[in-house]
Length: 340
Ligand code: SF4
Image (tube, rainbow, N blue to C red):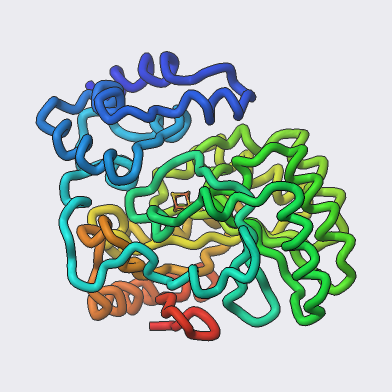
C-alpha cells in the first residue's frame, strides 16, 4: 500500500528535473501541506504549527520523496517535522549553544579554531533540520554584502596562519554559482590559503544542485577541495545522491560526512552501521558523529553520553576502522572538537 501511494506522490512533487533553484523555491514551507503530502492526520497539526512558529518548516521535493508516507516514525520525517516539544524549555538548552557570537570578528566570519575560518556564505538552507544548532542564528546580522565580503577577505589576507576557508551557512550551496565563483576566486588569490571546505546538505536534499555551473568553478580553483556532507540515516542516500557524489568526486573533491546522533533517527547500532556502509557506497567517508548541541527546541533528540559511548563501542565491533566516525562534542571555548 505504501509503495503504491509513493509513486504518484513523487511525480506530483518533483518540479522540472535538473532545475535545482525551482526545487529550492518549491520546498514545502507549510506544516499543513507537509502533513497532507505525507498522508499524516490532523492530529499532528497543532504540534507542527507550534514548532513551525519557532523555526519554519522547509522540505524540498527530492527529500520529501524519500520519506515513507503515513509513517510518523520515519527517520527522515523526524528530522524535518516540527513538533510541539520544540516549545518546551529544557535545562541547559540555549539559543547559541556554541557561543559563536563570541567569535565573530567580521560580519559573516567565525574564527574559532587555529588555521581555519568559517564563512557564512548563505543565510538560508534547502531544508530546515529541527535539531540544528543554528536554528536561532542571527543570519540577518551576518549576511555580508560584497563590500562587507571585502572586509572579511582583508581579515583572511592579513592572517597568514589561516590555511583553510570553510564555507558554511545556512547552506553555502544555496547561494548562486555566480556569487560562489566570485568568492572562491578571491579566496584562491590569497597565497596562504590551501584548502576550501564546504559544509553542505544540498547534494543530499537536492542532488541536482551538483550541476555543470557548480562543477565549473569548483573544479577549476587551485584550492584543495573538501565537501563535508551531513547525512544522518542511510535512507537519505538514494541513487541521485550517489550520482551527485560521483560528480563531486570527478571534480577532485574529497568527500566526508558528519552526522548528529539523534533520538528516534539513528540511535541504534544497526542503523549507524548501515549509514557508514551506504556512505562508502557513495564514495563518502564517515568523519564525525556529533552528540546533540544543546540548542533550545531540540532536547527531545538528545541521546545521553553514556548511551552514545556504548553505541559507538558496539559499532566498532561491526565496522572496519575506516568506516568509524569519531564521536565528538563541540564545547564552546575549546581549541577543537572534544572526543567522547
Ligand atoms: S545548517 Fe545544516 S543542519 Fe542546520 S538547518 Fe541548515 S542544513 Fe540543516
